[in-house]
Image 1 (cartoon, rainbow over the protein chains, first blue to last red):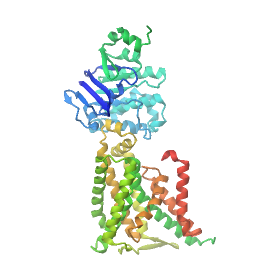
Image 2 (cartoon, rainbow over the protein chains, first blue to last red):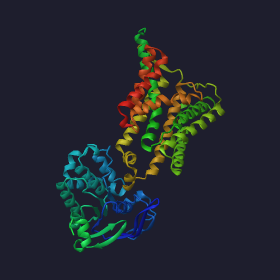
Image 3 (cartoon, rainbow over the protein chains, first blue to last red):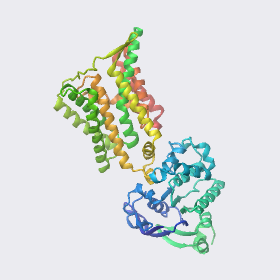
Image 4 (cartoon, each protein chain N blue to C red):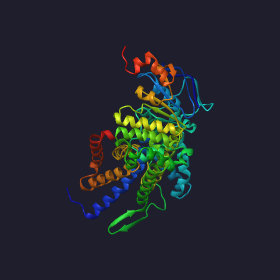
Length: 236
Length: 285
Protein backbone atom coordinates (compact mmCIF):
# COMPACT_ATOMS: atom_id res chain seq x y z
CA UNK A 1 0.00 0.00 0.00
CA UNK A 2 2.59 2.58 1.12
CA UNK A 3 5.92 2.61 -0.67
CA UNK A 4 8.82 4.76 0.44
CA UNK A 5 11.78 4.49 -1.89
CA UNK A 6 15.24 5.97 -1.30
CA UNK A 7 13.66 8.85 0.61
CA UNK A 8 15.84 11.81 1.51
CA UNK A 9 14.77 14.77 3.65
CA UNK A 10 17.00 17.79 4.20
CA UNK A 11 16.54 20.75 6.52
CA UNK A 12 18.62 23.52 4.98
CA UNK A 13 22.13 22.12 4.83
CA UNK A 14 21.48 19.27 7.26
CA UNK A 15 20.22 15.95 5.99
CA UNK A 16 17.82 14.27 8.39
CA UNK A 17 17.05 11.16 6.33
CA UNK A 18 19.19 9.37 3.75
CA UNK A 19 18.14 6.67 1.40
CA UNK A 20 15.27 5.32 3.50
CA UNK A 21 13.11 2.65 1.89
CA UNK A 22 10.16 1.07 3.67
CA UNK A 23 6.96 -0.63 2.57
CA UNK A 24 3.71 -1.19 4.36
CA UNK A 25 1.08 -3.58 3.04
CA UNK A 26 -2.64 -3.11 3.70
CA UNK A 27 -3.55 -4.12 7.23
CA UNK A 28 0.04 -4.52 8.44
CA UNK A 29 1.39 -3.24 11.76
CA UNK A 30 4.90 -2.03 11.10
CA UNK A 31 7.17 -0.50 13.65
CA UNK A 32 10.20 1.78 13.25
CA UNK A 33 12.54 1.81 16.21
CA UNK A 34 15.66 3.82 16.76
CA UNK A 35 17.35 6.19 19.19
CA UNK A 36 16.46 9.84 19.74
CA UNK A 37 17.37 12.01 16.79
CA UNK A 38 17.58 9.10 14.35
CA UNK A 39 15.00 10.73 12.09
CA UNK A 40 11.91 8.76 13.11
CA UNK A 41 9.70 11.83 13.43
CA UNK A 42 11.09 13.27 10.19
CA UNK A 43 10.14 10.03 8.43
CA UNK A 44 6.61 9.94 9.80
CA UNK A 45 6.06 13.65 9.14
CA UNK A 46 7.20 13.18 5.54
CA UNK A 47 4.73 10.33 5.05
CA UNK A 48 1.95 12.53 6.49
CA UNK A 49 2.84 15.38 4.14
CA UNK A 50 4.10 17.66 6.93
CA UNK A 51 7.64 17.75 5.52
CA UNK A 52 8.61 18.19 1.92
CA UNK A 53 10.90 15.45 0.68
CA UNK A 54 14.17 16.32 -1.04
CA UNK A 55 14.69 13.17 -3.07
CA UNK A 56 13.28 9.70 -3.49
CA UNK A 57 9.71 8.59 -3.93
CA UNK A 58 6.63 8.41 -1.76
CA UNK A 59 3.66 6.49 -3.14
CA UNK A 60 0.32 5.23 -1.90
CA UNK A 61 -1.29 2.39 -3.92
CA UNK A 62 1.15 3.17 -6.72
CA UNK A 63 0.11 6.82 -6.80
CA UNK A 64 2.98 9.25 -6.51
CA UNK A 65 2.67 11.64 -3.53
CA UNK A 66 5.86 13.62 -4.14
CA UNK A 67 4.17 16.67 -5.55
CA UNK A 68 0.86 16.39 -3.71
CA UNK A 69 0.04 19.50 -1.58
CA UNK A 70 0.28 18.71 2.15
CA UNK A 71 -3.43 19.14 2.82
CA UNK A 72 -4.37 16.43 0.31
CA UNK A 73 -2.40 13.60 1.96
CA UNK A 74 -5.32 12.72 4.20
CA UNK A 75 -7.48 12.13 1.13
CA UNK A 76 -5.10 9.27 0.34
CA UNK A 77 -6.16 7.59 3.57
CA UNK A 78 -3.21 8.71 5.69
CA UNK A 79 -3.77 10.13 9.20
CA UNK A 80 -1.19 11.10 11.79
CA UNK A 81 -0.97 11.03 15.58
CA UNK A 82 1.94 13.43 15.84
CA UNK A 83 4.73 13.49 18.37
CA UNK A 84 3.67 15.43 21.45
CA UNK A 85 0.01 14.97 20.39
CA UNK A 86 -0.34 18.53 19.03
CA UNK A 87 -4.02 18.87 19.84
CA UNK A 88 -5.83 22.12 19.16
CA UNK A 89 -5.72 22.90 22.86
CA UNK A 90 -8.03 25.92 22.85
CA UNK A 91 -10.73 23.95 21.06
CA UNK A 92 -13.04 21.46 22.73
CA UNK A 93 -12.43 17.71 22.54
CA UNK A 94 -15.46 17.35 20.28
CA UNK A 95 -14.18 20.10 17.98
CA UNK A 96 -10.81 18.35 17.75
CA UNK A 97 -12.57 15.16 16.74
CA UNK A 98 -14.79 16.99 14.26
CA UNK A 99 -11.74 18.57 12.70
CA UNK A 100 -10.34 15.07 12.20
CA UNK A 101 -13.22 14.46 9.83
CA UNK A 102 -12.82 17.76 7.97
CA UNK A 103 -12.47 16.29 4.49
CA UNK A 104 -15.77 15.60 2.70
CA UNK A 105 -15.18 11.83 2.49
CA UNK A 106 -14.77 11.60 6.28
CA UNK A 107 -17.42 14.23 7.02
CA UNK A 108 -20.29 12.16 5.65
CA UNK A 109 -19.43 9.40 8.14
CA UNK A 110 -18.80 11.79 11.04
CA UNK A 111 -21.53 10.58 13.36
CA UNK A 112 -20.68 6.90 12.91
CA UNK A 113 -16.96 7.59 13.34
CA UNK A 114 -17.66 9.56 16.50
CA UNK A 115 -19.65 6.69 17.99
CA UNK A 116 -16.87 4.29 17.12
CA UNK A 117 -14.04 6.32 18.69
CA UNK A 118 -16.10 6.84 21.82
CA UNK A 119 -16.52 3.08 22.02
CA UNK A 120 -12.75 2.70 21.83
CA UNK A 121 -12.16 5.52 24.34
CA UNK A 122 -15.21 5.64 26.65
CA UNK A 123 -13.29 7.96 29.00
CA UNK A 124 -13.71 10.76 26.45
CA UNK A 125 -17.51 10.61 26.53
CA UNK A 126 -17.82 12.91 29.51
CA UNK A 127 -15.05 15.26 28.36
CA UNK A 128 -16.35 16.18 24.91
CA UNK A 129 -17.12 19.79 25.81
CA UNK A 130 -13.87 20.40 27.72
CA UNK A 131 -11.05 22.36 26.07
CA UNK A 132 -8.56 19.72 24.88
CA UNK A 133 -5.72 21.46 26.72
CA UNK A 134 -7.34 20.79 30.10
CA UNK A 135 -7.23 16.98 29.77
CA UNK A 136 -4.64 14.73 31.39
CA UNK A 137 -1.75 13.48 29.26
CA UNK A 138 -3.30 10.05 28.78
CA UNK A 139 -6.65 11.50 27.75
CA UNK A 140 -4.94 13.93 25.38
CA UNK A 141 -3.23 10.97 23.73
CA UNK A 142 -6.63 9.32 23.37
CA UNK A 143 -7.97 12.47 21.69
CA UNK A 144 -4.99 12.53 19.32
CA UNK A 145 -5.61 8.91 18.28
CA UNK A 146 -9.38 9.47 18.10
CA UNK A 147 -8.89 12.58 15.96
CA UNK A 148 -6.82 10.58 13.49
CA UNK A 149 -9.42 7.78 13.42
CA UNK A 150 -12.13 10.33 12.61
CA UNK A 151 -10.36 10.84 9.26
CA UNK A 152 -11.16 7.18 8.44
CA UNK A 153 -7.56 6.33 7.55
CA UNK A 154 -6.30 3.19 5.81
CA UNK A 155 -2.86 3.96 7.20
CA UNK A 156 -2.47 5.33 10.73
CA UNK A 157 0.86 6.94 11.61
CA UNK A 158 1.67 6.93 15.32
CA UNK A 159 4.64 8.94 16.57
CA UNK A 160 5.70 7.97 20.11
CA UNK A 161 2.19 7.37 21.47
CA UNK A 162 3.56 6.17 24.81
CA UNK A 163 5.78 9.20 25.46
CA UNK A 164 5.29 10.66 28.92
CA UNK A 165 2.43 8.36 29.92
CA UNK A 166 2.04 6.25 33.05
CA UNK A 167 2.86 2.55 32.54
CA UNK A 168 -0.73 1.39 32.99
CA UNK A 169 -1.92 3.86 30.34
CA UNK A 170 0.90 2.78 28.01
CA UNK A 171 -0.40 -0.81 28.21
CA UNK A 172 -3.89 0.41 27.41
CA UNK A 173 -2.58 2.43 24.42
CA UNK A 174 -0.81 -0.60 22.97
CA UNK A 175 -3.94 -2.70 23.43
CA UNK A 176 -5.96 -0.06 21.54
CA UNK A 177 -3.36 0.20 18.76
CA UNK A 178 -3.52 -3.57 18.26
CA UNK A 179 -7.31 -3.41 18.22
CA UNK A 180 -7.32 -0.64 15.60
CA UNK A 181 -4.94 -2.67 13.48
CA UNK A 182 -7.10 -5.78 13.83
CA UNK A 183 -10.06 -3.77 12.50
CA UNK A 184 -8.16 -3.52 9.20
CA UNK A 185 -6.23 -0.24 9.48
CA UNK A 186 -2.53 -0.47 8.61
CA UNK A 187 -0.35 1.08 11.31
CA UNK A 188 3.10 2.59 11.18
CA UNK A 189 4.33 2.94 14.73
CA UNK A 190 7.41 4.85 15.79
CA UNK A 191 8.49 4.07 19.31
CA UNK A 192 11.30 4.39 21.80
CA UNK A 193 9.58 1.77 23.91
CA UNK A 194 11.20 -0.91 21.74
CA UNK A 195 10.25 -3.99 23.73
CA UNK A 196 6.55 -3.20 23.68
CA UNK A 197 6.56 -2.04 20.06
CA UNK A 198 8.23 -5.24 18.88
CA UNK A 199 5.70 -7.25 20.82
CA UNK A 200 2.73 -5.99 18.81
CA UNK A 201 4.45 -5.35 15.44
CA UNK A 202 4.29 -7.77 12.52
CA UNK A 203 7.45 -6.35 11.01
CA UNK A 204 10.02 -3.78 12.09
CA UNK A 205 12.70 -1.46 10.76
CA UNK A 206 15.64 -0.08 12.70
CA UNK A 207 16.47 3.54 11.88
CA UNK A 208 19.81 4.96 13.02
CA UNK A 209 21.36 8.27 12.01
CA UNK A 210 18.89 8.79 9.20
CA UNK A 211 19.32 5.34 7.58
CA UNK A 212 17.53 2.02 7.82
CA UNK A 213 20.13 -0.36 9.20
CA UNK A 214 18.00 -3.42 9.70
CA UNK A 215 14.65 -4.90 8.78
CA UNK A 216 12.80 -8.05 9.69
CA UNK A 217 10.30 -9.76 11.91
CA UNK A 218 10.40 -8.78 15.58
CA UNK A 219 11.84 -12.21 16.41
CA UNK A 220 14.69 -11.74 13.90
CA UNK A 221 15.53 -8.33 15.27
CA UNK A 222 15.45 -9.45 18.86
CA UNK A 223 18.01 -12.07 18.03
CA UNK A 224 20.51 -9.54 16.73
CA UNK A 225 23.13 -8.74 19.38
CA UNK A 226 23.31 -5.06 18.38
CA UNK A 227 19.55 -4.64 18.86
CA UNK A 228 19.57 -6.48 22.16
CA UNK A 229 22.37 -4.27 23.46
CA UNK A 230 21.16 -0.93 22.12
CA UNK A 231 17.41 -1.20 22.63
CA UNK A 232 16.54 -4.00 24.96
CA UNK A 233 18.88 -3.07 27.75
CA UNK A 234 20.95 -6.22 27.56
CA UNK A 235 24.51 -5.73 28.73
CA UNK A 236 27.57 -7.04 27.12
CA UNK B 1 -15.68 69.16 39.22
CA UNK B 2 -19.26 70.08 38.47
CA UNK B 3 -21.59 67.17 38.48
CA UNK B 4 -23.37 67.24 35.12
CA UNK B 5 -27.09 66.77 34.68
CA UNK B 6 -28.49 63.28 34.28
CA UNK B 7 -29.49 64.09 30.72
CA UNK B 8 -25.92 65.08 29.84
CA UNK B 9 -24.60 61.97 31.53
CA UNK B 10 -27.13 59.76 29.73
CA UNK B 11 -26.31 61.38 26.40
CA UNK B 12 -22.59 60.86 27.09
CA UNK B 13 -23.20 57.24 27.89
CA UNK B 14 -25.07 56.80 24.60
CA UNK B 15 -22.41 58.53 22.54
CA UNK B 16 -19.79 56.41 24.31
CA UNK B 17 -21.62 53.25 23.29
CA UNK B 18 -21.92 54.51 19.73
CA UNK B 19 -18.30 55.51 19.27
CA UNK B 20 -17.26 52.31 21.07
CA UNK B 21 -19.18 50.26 18.53
CA UNK B 22 -17.18 51.93 15.77
CA UNK B 23 -13.94 51.08 17.65
CA UNK B 24 -15.21 47.51 17.76
CA UNK B 25 -16.17 47.47 14.10
CA UNK B 26 -12.75 48.80 13.08
CA UNK B 27 -11.12 46.35 15.47
CA UNK B 28 -12.94 43.26 14.20
CA UNK B 29 -10.97 42.81 10.97
CA UNK B 30 -7.75 43.86 12.69
CA UNK B 31 -8.22 41.31 15.45
CA UNK B 32 -9.00 38.47 13.05
CA UNK B 33 -5.97 39.03 10.85
CA UNK B 34 -3.73 39.56 13.88
CA UNK B 35 -4.97 36.57 15.81
CA UNK B 36 -5.40 34.12 12.95
CA UNK B 37 -2.94 35.20 10.27
CA UNK B 38 -0.36 36.72 12.64
CA UNK B 39 -0.41 39.93 10.65
CA UNK B 40 -0.56 43.37 12.21
CA UNK B 41 -2.51 45.08 9.49
CA UNK B 42 -2.13 48.84 9.88
CA UNK B 43 -3.55 49.27 6.38
CA UNK B 44 -6.93 48.28 7.85
CA UNK B 45 -7.44 51.89 9.00
CA UNK B 46 -6.41 53.38 5.68
CA UNK B 47 -8.70 50.94 3.93
CA UNK B 48 -11.61 51.96 6.16
CA UNK B 49 -10.99 55.61 5.29
CA UNK B 50 -10.69 54.78 1.61
CA UNK B 51 -14.07 53.06 1.98
CA UNK B 52 -15.45 56.15 3.71
CA UNK B 53 -14.24 58.43 0.91
CA UNK B 54 -15.61 56.10 -1.74
CA UNK B 55 -18.97 56.10 0.04
CA UNK B 56 -18.77 59.89 0.17
CA UNK B 57 -17.99 60.08 -3.54
CA UNK B 58 -20.65 57.61 -4.66
CA UNK B 59 -23.27 59.29 -2.45
CA UNK B 60 -22.51 62.98 -2.94
CA UNK B 61 -21.39 62.97 -6.54
CA UNK B 62 -23.01 59.95 -8.16
CA UNK B 63 -26.10 60.23 -5.98
CA UNK B 64 -26.31 56.66 -4.71
CA UNK B 65 -27.91 55.74 -1.40
CA UNK B 66 -25.05 55.24 1.12
CA UNK B 67 -26.19 51.71 1.95
CA UNK B 68 -26.27 50.76 -1.72
CA UNK B 69 -22.60 51.73 -2.09
CA UNK B 70 -21.73 48.60 -0.12
CA UNK B 71 -22.79 46.52 -3.12
CA UNK B 72 -19.88 48.06 -5.03
CA UNK B 73 -17.38 48.56 -2.21
CA UNK B 74 -17.59 45.16 -0.50
CA UNK B 75 -16.64 43.01 -3.53
CA UNK B 76 -13.78 45.38 -4.44
CA UNK B 77 -12.45 45.41 -0.88
CA UNK B 78 -12.79 41.65 -0.56
CA UNK B 79 -10.72 41.29 -3.73
CA UNK B 80 -8.15 43.75 -2.36
CA UNK B 81 -7.84 41.73 0.86
CA UNK B 82 -7.38 38.51 -1.09
CA UNK B 83 -4.73 40.11 -3.30
CA UNK B 84 -2.89 41.52 -0.28
CA UNK B 85 -2.79 38.12 1.43
CA UNK B 86 -1.67 36.49 -1.80
CA UNK B 87 1.28 38.87 -1.97
CA UNK B 88 2.05 38.39 1.75
CA UNK B 89 2.15 34.65 1.33
CA UNK B 90 4.02 34.84 -2.00
CA UNK B 91 6.81 36.86 -0.36
CA UNK B 92 6.59 35.05 3.00
CA UNK B 93 6.22 38.26 5.02
CA UNK B 94 6.87 37.80 8.75
CA UNK B 95 4.55 39.25 11.43
CA UNK B 96 6.92 42.11 12.20
CA UNK B 97 7.47 42.91 8.53
CA UNK B 98 3.71 42.90 8.00
CA UNK B 99 3.60 45.93 10.29
CA UNK B 100 6.15 47.75 8.14
CA UNK B 101 4.59 46.75 4.82
CA UNK B 102 1.07 47.67 5.88
CA UNK B 103 2.35 50.97 7.24
CA UNK B 104 3.72 51.58 3.75
CA UNK B 105 0.34 50.70 2.24
CA UNK B 106 -1.28 53.12 4.71
CA UNK B 107 0.93 55.99 3.57
CA UNK B 108 0.21 55.18 -0.08
CA UNK B 109 -3.55 55.09 0.50
CA UNK B 110 -3.36 58.33 2.51
CA UNK B 111 -1.53 60.04 -0.36
CA UNK B 112 -4.03 58.66 -2.82
CA UNK B 113 -6.91 60.05 -0.75
CA UNK B 114 -5.19 63.41 -0.41
CA UNK B 115 -4.56 63.55 -4.16
CA UNK B 116 -8.12 62.62 -5.12
CA UNK B 117 -10.09 64.45 -2.45
CA UNK B 118 -7.54 67.01 -1.13
CA UNK B 119 -6.76 67.50 2.56
CA UNK B 120 -9.94 69.51 3.10
CA UNK B 121 -12.56 68.20 5.47
CA UNK B 122 -15.37 66.32 3.76
CA UNK B 123 -18.76 65.62 5.18
CA UNK B 124 -21.21 63.36 3.47
CA UNK B 125 -24.74 64.67 2.96
CA UNK B 126 -27.19 61.84 2.96
CA UNK B 127 -30.81 61.25 3.76
CA UNK B 128 -29.66 59.59 6.98
CA UNK B 129 -27.38 62.38 8.22
CA UNK B 130 -29.90 64.20 10.41
CA UNK B 131 -32.27 61.37 11.22
CA UNK B 132 -32.73 60.81 14.89
CA UNK B 133 -35.40 59.98 17.40
CA UNK B 134 -35.99 60.87 21.00
CA UNK B 135 -36.18 58.47 23.93
CA UNK B 136 -37.27 60.41 27.00
CA UNK B 137 -34.83 63.30 27.13
CA UNK B 138 -32.14 61.54 25.06
CA UNK B 139 -31.50 61.85 21.34
CA UNK B 140 -30.62 58.71 19.39
CA UNK B 141 -29.04 59.50 16.01
CA UNK B 142 -29.91 56.93 13.33
CA UNK B 143 -26.45 56.69 11.66
CA UNK B 144 -24.78 55.90 14.99
CA UNK B 145 -27.49 53.43 15.92
CA UNK B 146 -26.93 51.79 12.53
CA UNK B 147 -23.19 51.51 13.33
CA UNK B 148 -23.97 49.83 16.64
CA UNK B 149 -26.35 47.34 15.05
CA UNK B 150 -23.97 46.53 12.19
CA UNK B 151 -21.09 46.05 14.65
CA UNK B 152 -23.17 43.67 16.77
CA UNK B 153 -24.43 41.80 13.72
CA UNK B 154 -20.97 41.34 12.17
CA UNK B 155 -19.27 40.40 15.44
CA UNK B 156 -21.93 37.86 16.38
CA UNK B 157 -22.13 36.30 12.94
CA UNK B 158 -18.32 36.02 12.76
CA UNK B 159 -18.36 34.40 16.19
CA UNK B 160 -21.08 31.95 15.15
CA UNK B 161 -19.25 31.13 11.93
CA UNK B 162 -16.03 30.39 13.80
CA UNK B 163 -17.83 28.42 16.49
CA UNK B 164 -20.37 26.34 14.62
CA UNK B 165 -19.17 25.67 11.08
CA UNK B 166 -16.51 23.34 9.71
CA UNK B 167 -14.94 26.33 8.00
CA UNK B 168 -14.73 28.19 11.32
CA UNK B 169 -13.24 25.19 13.12
CA UNK B 170 -10.71 24.86 10.31
CA UNK B 171 -9.74 28.53 10.71
CA UNK B 172 -9.27 28.18 14.46
CA UNK B 173 -7.35 24.93 14.10
CA UNK B 174 -5.15 26.52 11.48
CA UNK B 175 -4.42 29.46 13.77
CA UNK B 176 -3.35 27.06 16.55
CA UNK B 177 -1.28 24.59 14.53
CA UNK B 178 -1.32 25.12 10.79
CA UNK B 179 0.78 22.06 10.00
CA UNK B 180 -1.49 19.62 11.81
CA UNK B 181 -4.64 21.29 10.50
CA UNK B 182 -3.20 20.78 7.00
CA UNK B 183 -2.54 17.11 7.81
CA UNK B 184 -6.29 16.77 8.34
CA UNK B 185 -7.04 18.39 5.01
CA UNK B 186 -7.31 22.09 5.84
CA UNK B 187 -6.06 24.21 2.96
CA UNK B 188 -4.35 26.90 5.00
CA UNK B 189 -3.46 29.18 2.10
CA UNK B 190 -7.00 29.26 0.77
CA UNK B 191 -8.43 30.01 4.22
CA UNK B 192 -5.92 32.82 4.72
CA UNK B 193 -7.02 34.41 1.43
CA UNK B 194 -10.65 34.13 2.50
CA UNK B 195 -10.00 35.58 5.95
CA UNK B 196 -8.00 38.49 4.57
CA UNK B 197 -10.78 39.18 2.06
CA UNK B 198 -13.39 39.25 4.82
CA UNK B 199 -11.21 41.44 6.98
CA UNK B 200 -10.85 44.00 4.18
CA UNK B 201 -14.60 43.87 3.50
CA UNK B 202 -15.17 44.60 7.21
CA UNK B 203 -12.95 47.67 6.74
CA UNK B 204 -15.30 48.69 3.94
CA UNK B 205 -18.32 48.41 6.25
CA UNK B 206 -16.49 50.44 8.92
CA UNK B 207 -15.77 52.99 6.19
CA UNK B 208 -19.48 53.37 5.47
CA UNK B 209 -20.15 53.95 9.18
CA UNK B 210 -17.33 56.51 9.36
CA UNK B 211 -18.79 58.38 6.38
CA UNK B 212 -22.29 58.32 7.86
CA UNK B 213 -21.34 59.97 11.15
CA UNK B 214 -17.96 61.68 10.86
CA UNK B 215 -16.19 64.45 9.02
CA UNK B 216 -13.42 62.96 6.90
CA UNK B 217 -9.86 64.12 6.35
CA UNK B 218 -6.86 62.03 5.27
CA UNK B 219 -4.91 62.62 8.48
CA UNK B 220 -7.81 61.23 10.52
CA UNK B 221 -6.56 57.75 9.55
CA UNK B 222 -3.95 57.97 12.30
CA UNK B 223 -6.30 59.34 14.95
CA UNK B 224 -8.08 55.98 15.29
CA UNK B 225 -5.10 53.64 15.41
CA UNK B 226 -4.19 53.94 19.08
CA UNK B 227 -7.60 53.49 20.60
CA UNK B 228 -8.66 50.70 18.23
CA UNK B 229 -5.42 48.83 18.97
CA UNK B 230 -6.29 49.16 22.64
CA UNK B 231 -9.75 47.68 21.99
CA UNK B 232 -8.27 44.79 20.00
CA UNK B 233 -5.67 43.92 22.61
CA UNK B 234 -8.08 44.23 25.53
CA UNK B 235 -10.65 42.18 23.61
CA UNK B 236 -8.19 39.39 22.88
CA UNK B 237 -6.51 38.70 19.53
CA UNK B 238 -8.61 36.66 17.16
CA UNK B 239 -11.68 36.97 19.36
CA UNK B 240 -14.56 38.29 17.22
CA UNK B 241 -16.68 39.59 20.13
CA UNK B 242 -13.80 41.02 22.19
CA UNK B 243 -13.08 44.19 20.22
CA UNK B 244 -16.74 45.25 20.31
CA UNK B 245 -17.09 44.70 24.06
CA UNK B 246 -13.73 46.34 24.79
CA UNK B 247 -14.50 49.12 22.32
CA UNK B 248 -17.76 49.95 24.07
CA UNK B 249 -16.08 49.84 27.50
CA UNK B 250 -13.43 52.26 26.25
CA UNK B 251 -15.96 54.47 24.47
CA UNK B 252 -18.16 54.76 27.56
CA UNK B 253 -15.17 55.36 29.85
CA UNK B 254 -13.97 58.11 27.53
CA UNK B 255 -17.37 59.74 27.21
CA UNK B 256 -17.95 59.73 30.96
CA UNK B 257 -14.48 61.17 31.52
CA UNK B 258 -15.24 63.93 29.04
CA UNK B 259 -18.51 64.77 30.76
CA UNK B 260 -17.16 64.60 34.30
CA UNK B 261 -13.63 65.96 33.96
CA UNK B 262 -12.60 67.35 30.61
CA UNK B 263 -12.36 66.10 27.01
CA UNK B 264 -8.57 66.35 27.12
CA UNK B 265 -8.46 63.51 29.65
CA UNK B 266 -10.29 61.00 27.45
CA UNK B 267 -7.26 59.36 25.77
CA UNK B 268 -5.73 58.80 29.18
CA UNK B 269 -8.57 56.45 30.04
CA UNK B 270 -8.24 54.17 27.04
CA UNK B 271 -4.49 53.88 27.34
CA UNK B 272 -4.60 53.37 31.09
CA UNK B 273 -6.99 50.49 30.42
CA UNK B 274 -4.62 49.11 27.80
CA UNK B 275 -1.63 49.30 30.14
CA UNK B 276 -3.56 47.57 32.92
CA UNK B 277 -4.60 44.79 30.54
CA UNK B 278 -1.08 44.40 29.17
CA UNK B 279 0.27 44.13 32.70
CA UNK B 280 -2.33 41.71 34.01
CA UNK B 281 -2.91 39.37 31.11
CA UNK B 282 0.22 39.66 29.04
CA UNK B 283 0.19 35.87 28.62
CA UNK B 284 -3.05 36.09 26.66
CA UNK B 285 -1.45 38.42 24.13
